[in-house]
Image: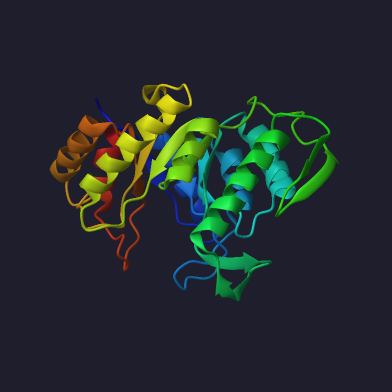
Length: 281
Protein backbone atom coordinates (compact mmCIF):
# COMPACT_ATOMS: atom_id res chain seq x y z
CA UNK A 1 0.00 0.00 0.00
CA UNK A 2 1.30 3.46 -0.90
CA UNK A 3 1.27 5.94 1.94
CA UNK A 4 -0.75 9.11 1.51
CA UNK A 5 1.64 12.06 1.64
CA UNK A 6 1.17 15.24 3.68
CA UNK A 7 3.29 18.39 3.96
CA UNK A 8 4.12 20.43 7.06
CA UNK A 9 4.31 24.15 6.29
CA UNK A 10 6.46 26.60 8.27
CA UNK A 11 4.51 29.78 9.25
CA UNK A 12 7.59 31.99 9.32
CA UNK A 13 7.56 34.00 6.09
CA UNK A 14 5.71 37.10 4.91
CA UNK A 15 2.26 36.46 3.50
CA UNK A 16 2.96 36.61 -0.25
CA UNK A 17 5.52 33.83 0.16
CA UNK A 18 3.28 31.87 2.52
CA UNK A 19 0.41 32.10 0.03
CA UNK A 20 2.68 30.68 -2.68
CA UNK A 21 3.72 27.84 -0.36
CA UNK A 22 0.13 26.86 0.47
CA UNK A 23 -0.80 26.94 -3.21
CA UNK A 24 2.28 24.94 -4.17
CA UNK A 25 1.46 22.30 -1.56
CA UNK A 26 -1.87 21.80 -3.28
CA UNK A 27 -0.33 21.86 -6.78
CA UNK A 28 2.13 19.13 -5.81
CA UNK A 29 -0.75 16.85 -4.95
CA UNK A 30 -0.27 16.46 -1.20
CA UNK A 31 -3.23 14.95 0.61
CA UNK A 32 -2.93 17.39 3.51
CA UNK A 33 -1.10 20.56 4.50
CA UNK A 34 -0.41 20.95 8.21
CA UNK A 35 0.94 23.64 10.51
CA UNK A 36 2.36 23.48 14.03
CA UNK A 37 0.18 25.26 16.57
CA UNK A 38 2.73 27.20 18.63
CA UNK A 39 3.25 30.78 19.74
CA UNK A 40 6.92 30.46 18.78
CA UNK A 41 9.11 27.43 18.29
CA UNK A 42 12.74 26.66 18.98
CA UNK A 43 13.59 30.33 19.19
CA UNK A 44 12.03 31.31 15.86
CA UNK A 45 9.91 34.42 15.81
CA UNK A 46 7.76 35.68 14.21
CA UNK A 47 5.77 32.47 14.19
CA UNK A 48 2.31 33.12 12.78
CA UNK A 49 -0.80 31.87 14.55
CA UNK A 50 -1.91 28.48 13.27
CA UNK A 51 -5.63 29.19 13.07
CA UNK A 52 -5.24 32.57 11.38
CA UNK A 53 -2.80 30.94 8.96
CA UNK A 54 -5.22 28.12 8.15
CA UNK A 55 -8.04 30.57 7.48
CA UNK A 56 -5.79 32.40 5.02
CA UNK A 57 -4.64 29.10 3.48
CA UNK A 58 -8.26 28.02 3.05
CA UNK A 59 -8.94 31.14 1.01
CA UNK A 60 -6.09 30.47 -1.48
CA UNK A 61 -6.57 26.71 -1.92
CA UNK A 62 -9.50 24.56 -3.00
CA UNK A 63 -8.60 20.86 -2.64
CA UNK A 64 -5.89 20.08 -0.12
CA UNK A 65 -7.00 19.27 3.42
CA UNK A 66 -5.71 21.65 6.09
CA UNK A 67 -4.88 20.94 9.69
CA UNK A 68 -3.02 21.62 12.92
CA UNK A 69 -0.24 19.31 14.01
CA UNK A 70 -1.06 19.56 16.82
CA UNK A 71 -3.42 21.80 18.76
CA UNK A 72 -3.31 21.27 22.53
CA UNK A 73 -5.01 22.62 25.66
CA UNK A 74 -1.79 24.32 26.77
CA UNK A 75 -3.00 27.70 25.52
CA UNK A 76 -6.24 26.94 23.62
CA UNK A 77 -9.40 26.80 25.72
CA UNK A 78 -12.41 24.86 24.40
CA UNK A 79 -14.99 27.52 23.46
CA UNK A 80 -12.86 29.93 21.36
CA UNK A 81 -11.01 26.96 19.86
CA UNK A 82 -14.31 25.40 18.75
CA UNK A 83 -15.39 28.73 17.27
CA UNK A 84 -12.14 29.02 15.29
CA UNK A 85 -12.55 25.43 14.09
CA UNK A 86 -16.06 26.17 12.83
CA UNK A 87 -14.86 29.30 11.03
CA UNK A 88 -12.02 27.54 9.19
CA UNK A 89 -14.28 24.60 8.36
CA UNK A 90 -16.70 27.05 6.73
CA UNK A 91 -14.04 29.04 4.87
CA UNK A 92 -12.40 25.87 3.57
CA UNK A 93 -15.64 24.21 2.50
CA UNK A 94 -15.13 21.32 4.91
CA UNK A 95 -11.39 20.67 4.42
CA UNK A 96 -10.23 21.00 8.03
CA UNK A 97 -8.71 18.15 10.04
CA UNK A 98 -7.81 18.71 13.69
CA UNK A 99 -4.55 17.18 14.77
CA UNK A 100 -4.75 17.36 18.56
CA UNK A 101 -2.52 16.28 21.41
CA UNK A 102 -1.79 16.83 25.08
CA UNK A 103 1.08 19.23 24.34
CA UNK A 104 4.30 19.69 26.24
CA UNK A 105 4.84 19.60 29.97
CA UNK A 106 5.15 23.35 30.43
CA UNK A 107 2.05 25.12 31.72
CA UNK A 108 1.33 27.85 29.18
CA UNK A 109 -1.26 30.51 29.88
CA UNK A 110 -1.93 33.58 27.74
CA UNK A 111 1.39 33.09 26.01
CA UNK A 112 3.48 33.09 29.18
CA UNK A 113 5.38 29.98 30.25
CA UNK A 114 5.03 29.67 34.00
CA UNK A 115 7.62 28.20 36.35
CA UNK A 116 6.02 24.77 36.71
CA UNK A 117 5.45 21.66 34.66
CA UNK A 118 2.36 19.52 34.29
CA UNK A 119 2.70 16.02 35.64
CA UNK A 120 1.84 13.22 33.17
CA UNK A 121 -1.45 12.70 35.00
CA UNK A 122 -2.32 16.42 34.90
CA UNK A 123 -1.61 16.55 31.17
CA UNK A 124 -3.76 13.48 30.54
CA UNK A 125 -6.60 14.82 32.71
CA UNK A 126 -6.60 18.20 30.98
CA UNK A 127 -6.40 16.69 27.51
CA UNK A 128 -9.25 14.25 28.05
CA UNK A 129 -11.53 16.95 29.43
CA UNK A 130 -10.56 19.31 26.59
CA UNK A 131 -11.29 16.73 23.88
CA UNK A 132 -14.60 15.76 25.48
CA UNK A 133 -15.68 19.41 25.59
CA UNK A 134 -14.53 20.15 22.02
CA UNK A 135 -16.52 17.17 20.82
CA UNK A 136 -19.63 18.40 22.64
CA UNK A 137 -19.24 21.94 21.30
CA UNK A 138 -18.83 20.77 17.70
CA UNK A 139 -21.76 18.36 17.76
CA UNK A 140 -24.37 19.88 20.07
CA UNK A 141 -26.37 23.00 20.81
CA UNK A 142 -26.67 24.93 24.07
CA UNK A 143 -23.78 22.96 25.53
CA UNK A 144 -23.27 23.07 29.27
CA UNK A 145 -20.42 21.32 31.03
CA UNK A 146 -18.70 21.63 34.37
CA UNK A 147 -15.18 20.27 34.40
CA UNK A 148 -12.15 20.41 36.59
CA UNK A 149 -10.35 22.77 34.22
CA UNK A 150 -13.04 24.42 32.03
CA UNK A 151 -16.75 25.01 32.32
CA UNK A 152 -19.43 26.47 30.06
CA UNK A 153 -23.14 27.10 30.13
CA UNK A 154 -25.53 27.19 27.18
CA UNK A 155 -22.85 27.63 24.49
CA UNK A 156 -23.79 26.96 20.86
CA UNK A 157 -21.02 26.69 18.27
CA UNK A 158 -21.85 23.83 15.91
CA UNK A 159 -24.50 25.37 13.58
CA UNK A 160 -22.96 26.24 10.22
CA UNK A 161 -20.32 23.51 10.21
CA UNK A 162 -19.77 22.03 6.75
CA UNK A 163 -18.53 18.77 8.22
CA UNK A 164 -20.74 17.23 10.90
CA UNK A 165 -17.67 17.58 13.06
CA UNK A 166 -14.19 18.14 11.61
CA UNK A 167 -12.24 14.92 12.13
CA UNK A 168 -10.01 14.62 15.18
CA UNK A 169 -6.63 12.99 14.52
CA UNK A 170 -5.31 12.36 18.01
CA UNK A 171 -1.66 12.16 19.03
CA UNK A 172 -1.99 9.79 21.95
CA UNK A 173 0.79 7.42 22.97
CA UNK A 174 0.11 6.33 26.54
CA UNK A 175 -2.77 4.07 27.60
CA UNK A 176 -5.17 6.98 28.24
CA UNK A 177 -4.24 8.79 25.04
CA UNK A 178 -4.77 5.65 22.98
CA UNK A 179 -8.14 5.03 24.61
CA UNK A 180 -9.10 8.64 23.86
CA UNK A 181 -8.06 8.17 20.23
CA UNK A 182 -10.17 5.01 20.04
CA UNK A 183 -13.16 6.82 21.53
CA UNK A 184 -13.08 10.20 19.79
CA UNK A 185 -10.49 9.98 17.01
CA UNK A 186 -11.06 9.66 13.30
CA UNK A 187 -7.28 9.32 12.91
CA UNK A 188 -4.15 8.76 14.98
CA UNK A 189 -0.74 10.49 14.88
CA UNK A 190 2.58 8.82 15.68
CA UNK A 191 5.49 11.07 16.63
CA UNK A 192 8.46 8.77 17.36
CA UNK A 193 11.45 10.40 19.02
CA UNK A 194 13.46 7.41 20.22
CA UNK A 195 16.60 5.96 18.65
CA UNK A 196 14.48 3.03 17.43
CA UNK A 197 11.49 4.76 15.83
CA UNK A 198 10.33 1.78 13.78
CA UNK A 199 10.07 -0.47 16.83
CA UNK A 200 8.46 2.35 18.80
CA UNK A 201 5.75 2.91 16.18
CA UNK A 202 5.13 -0.81 15.70
CA UNK A 203 4.55 -1.26 19.43
CA UNK A 204 2.21 1.73 19.63
CA UNK A 205 0.23 0.53 16.62
CA UNK A 206 -0.35 -2.79 18.38
CA UNK A 207 -1.60 -0.97 21.49
CA UNK A 208 -3.82 1.28 19.34
CA UNK A 209 -5.38 -1.80 17.76
CA UNK A 210 -6.10 -3.21 21.22
CA UNK A 211 -7.65 0.09 22.37
CA UNK A 212 -9.85 0.21 19.27
CA UNK A 213 -10.95 -3.39 19.79
CA UNK A 214 -11.87 -2.60 23.39
CA UNK A 215 -13.94 0.35 22.10
CA UNK A 216 -15.67 -1.82 19.51
CA UNK A 217 -13.83 -0.25 16.57
CA UNK A 218 -11.71 -1.68 13.78
CA UNK A 219 -8.33 0.09 13.74
CA UNK A 220 -8.21 -0.47 9.96
CA UNK A 221 -10.89 2.21 9.52
CA UNK A 222 -8.67 4.85 11.17
CA UNK A 223 -5.92 6.71 9.24
CA UNK A 224 -2.58 6.40 11.03
CA UNK A 225 -0.21 9.30 10.32
CA UNK A 226 3.54 9.14 10.92
CA UNK A 227 5.19 12.49 11.70
CA UNK A 228 8.73 12.40 10.32
CA UNK A 229 11.74 14.64 10.80
CA UNK A 230 12.62 14.10 14.46
CA UNK A 231 14.70 10.95 14.13
CA UNK A 232 17.73 9.94 12.06
CA UNK A 233 15.61 8.27 9.37
CA UNK A 234 16.52 9.85 5.98
CA UNK A 235 13.02 10.41 4.61
CA UNK A 236 14.05 13.22 2.24
CA UNK A 237 17.58 12.07 1.37
CA UNK A 238 16.42 10.58 -1.95
CA UNK A 239 13.37 9.08 -3.60
CA UNK A 240 14.77 5.62 -2.98
CA UNK A 241 15.29 6.34 0.72
CA UNK A 242 11.71 7.56 0.97
CA UNK A 243 10.33 4.50 -0.83
CA UNK A 244 12.28 2.12 1.40
CA UNK A 245 11.05 3.75 4.61
CA UNK A 246 7.49 4.17 3.35
CA UNK A 247 7.34 0.51 2.44
CA UNK A 248 8.57 -0.60 5.87
CA UNK A 249 6.07 1.56 7.74
CA UNK A 250 3.18 0.64 5.46
CA UNK A 251 3.83 -3.02 6.28
CA UNK A 252 3.18 -2.43 9.98
CA UNK A 253 0.04 -0.35 9.48
CA UNK A 254 0.97 3.29 8.89
CA UNK A 255 -1.32 4.79 6.23
CA UNK A 256 -0.13 8.41 5.99
CA UNK A 257 3.19 10.22 6.31
CA UNK A 258 3.90 13.90 7.08
CA UNK A 259 7.02 15.48 5.56
CA UNK A 260 8.45 18.89 6.42
CA UNK A 261 8.69 21.46 3.67
CA UNK A 262 12.47 21.87 3.12
CA UNK A 263 13.83 24.65 5.34
CA UNK A 264 17.35 25.78 4.41
CA UNK A 265 19.82 26.19 7.24
CA UNK A 266 17.87 23.99 9.64
CA UNK A 267 17.73 20.33 10.55
CA UNK A 268 14.86 20.09 8.07
CA UNK A 269 16.96 21.17 5.11
CA UNK A 270 16.50 18.97 2.05
CA UNK A 271 16.72 19.09 -1.73
CA UNK A 272 13.47 20.70 -2.96
CA UNK A 273 13.67 18.58 -6.12
CA UNK A 274 13.57 15.38 -4.03
CA UNK A 275 10.68 16.76 -1.98
CA UNK A 276 8.70 17.51 -5.13
CA UNK A 277 9.54 14.13 -6.67
CA UNK A 278 8.20 12.38 -3.56
CA UNK A 279 5.09 14.54 -3.62
CA UNK A 280 4.43 13.47 -7.20
CA UNK A 281 4.08 9.85 -6.09
